[in-house]
Image 1 (cartoon, rainbow, N blue to C red):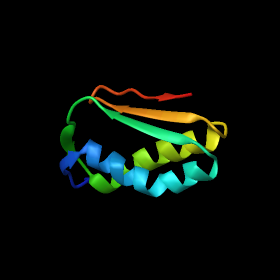
Image 2: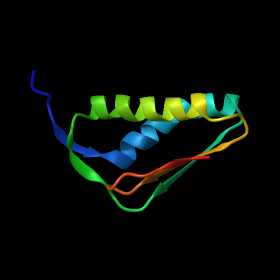
Image 3: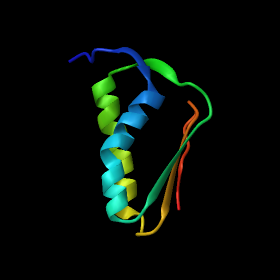
Image 4: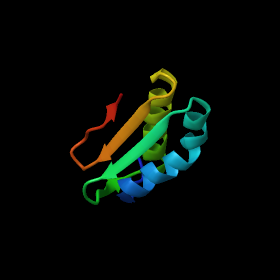
Length: 83
């Protein structure tokens, strides 16, 4: 089945995901930092992209120890770090 695509702003999607996941991180006393190097606009399905980014950040929160920092970098070329 074809996937409906439209112009998506990855920065907005990641910020929306942060709104949902920040309480989970706070429960583990984790800090999430987001660095946006440049705008990242592309064609895709916003709902599917939201789910993919949510899964990534949710896993980072689950598998990063308490009292840690999770850093995400948006640069259109990939990247990110959990420490």
